[in-house]
Image (cartoon, rainbow, N blue to C red):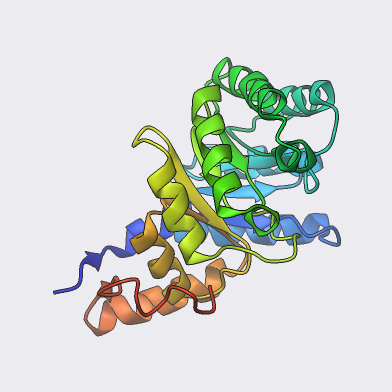
Length: 246
């Protein structure tokens, strides 16, 4: 019998994303309303939106989240640290940083690990958590494994697939590989192109604890429908979804 998933557990898998460059303040307010309505894990917004997002989410269990070094990852390390500090000052509780993709591709693992460690120390010193975006579309499987291990060694709380702005987003086989490459202390977040409940369930089966999505309303409406009709269930295996559309 496939595993049944509670409706509230689906909601708490979702980091509601409001990262598009064209979003207005009204769009951010609407995004926070959606997250509060369904009880998502976070609202992941642009750094400049953090004061507003933190205010709108205050008193709820939906946390403010932002991105650091987004989306290319090649900001100076001290700039990433400053950006993180300012976000924390603004009330942010979760930081999603992009590792330096070029340095990772060049094999400069010491640089990559040190940068992540600096951001992890910054986050943990303020009771926040750090997710490391690998941008898996640019990395080989071997590099993904290495990036996962560097992230854990540096103190990251999550490894995350994608920004959503690379050449491809989350792939189930990458989620599975990432889950296998870190210990239980580190969680996995899938992000990029995830728009359906079935994609969420596939990522959950592969080992994702969170998913970054902008289609929260559609996903939760489908989850509510299935829950009312008899339940939400994981796929019986990954065979049907590996190599598929997500």
